[in-house]
Image (cartoon, rainbow, N blue to C red; front, side, top):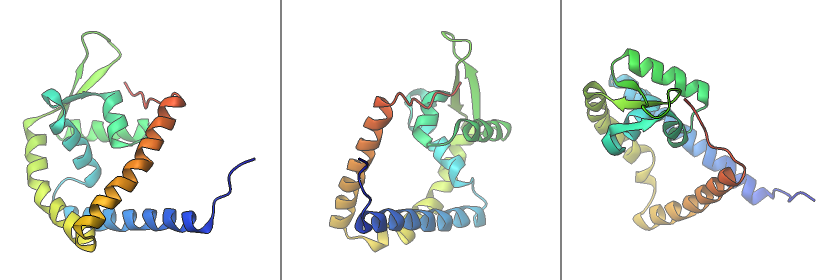
Length: 161
């Protein structure tokens, strides 16, 4: 027998989705108005910036940014065309590739961050106390941990190039 989804949990889910979409849409508009990289590009570039050597295998990048395989490939193609990242073949696996942050990509992240930070403050942080933010982090962390355990148990690895 399948568990039943109750109204309380369904309402929480819908509110989470709407709040996320509303904040993301507002931040995306602000980045665009400021002439900065789109949020999806920023997400890829910041993952590379924070990675050891500013490089990640494509499969790891796919896991970190939560994009479909085709969506990530198109985005990486565009970022490479714009000179914000480079692809490098791996020495150990001819099919594999690394995405590597370029100096131009680093500068794009630096320029976009102030706009992004203001958006996070205005559309998210301003509505939560410090205690509420800590509680939300803990609660969403539990959801994230449960999802990651389910992904690993089901064999989902997000493998891309």
